[in-house]
Length: 237
Image 1 (cartoon, rainbow, N blue to C red):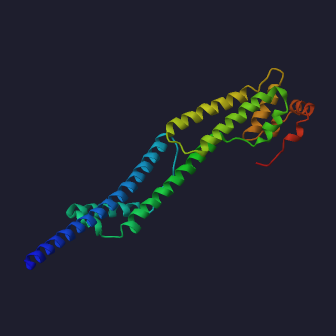
Image 2: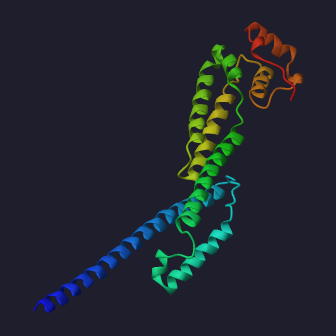
Image 3: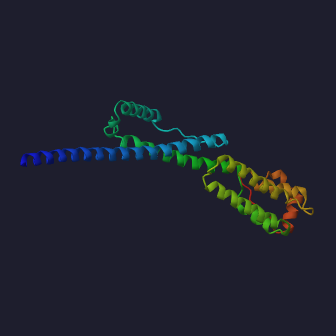
């Protein structure tokens, strides 16, 4: 009787150990699955974002370091798991430090570069001057409201540049709309009582810079009459 109980107990212990082993193995599978799902989602999102920016005309100069090597590791792991699913718990290389963490680093670098590329894209399309000219224009009653509008458009554009777009095409279209409004506000500066030469000088000074030939006697007289000569500086390009 005692031997039968001992045998039964031994069998139960054996079954328990088997179940525990299966549970431990299942937990390891679950951990690996979560790791792969997380990094897979991040890689997919970054890849889609890169493609979307490119299709919207935003150039992102980014090449993953050792990308081919990690692709080869992924293929190696896929083959190993296909032959024996348990290989996921004893991979042919350090799965976390030599693969998943490295992929996460590549994704982080790509995300950073995309943010920088978006800001560069907006900056190149805008190329706004400093606020000195706007400050000068704000002193002229005829310009004041247009200056307010221009500053508002620039503020919205700055905010647009600071936030990575979830929809690159929509963001590029929105930027185009804002630039059109901004340019329209500049065009509205041509009030009836302001000479065209003065308007042209202001626009040039607010952009890439006005040539000395545009600083005519008429422009100088107009600026002097409003005490605005000191608002401008001449620099060598």
